[in-house]
Length: 111
Ligand code: SF4
Image (cartoon, rainbow, N blue to C red; front, side, top):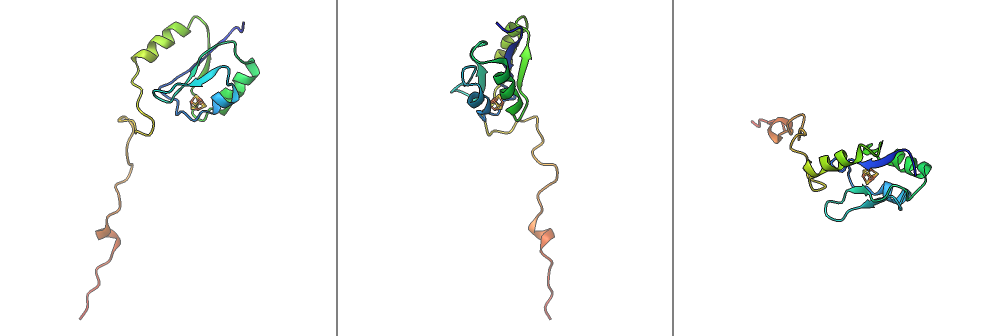
């Protein structure tokens, strides 16, 4: 067995499924929230898992020690997982306000 375990931070995962396509014996996208999860630790080679890690667009797959796994899994149970496509309330929705029609359209005077 490998010296390191693989773990997905499901609160960050965006459910793109790249990892599950690359290392299908390790990662599964769970059906409830659409996030990836490492379902077994010895399903794929270390190189293949590393390739899956490298394809993750949000860098949420991590190598951890086996001793860290129980605490990380317990932490996931405490995190709020939002449905995909719903913006996080902590994220700014818009940096600048929308442009209004009154600003964009000049007033033309006719005589
Ligand atoms: S590649 Fe990353 S973001 Fe995509 S499903 Fe896997 S863990 Fe989630």
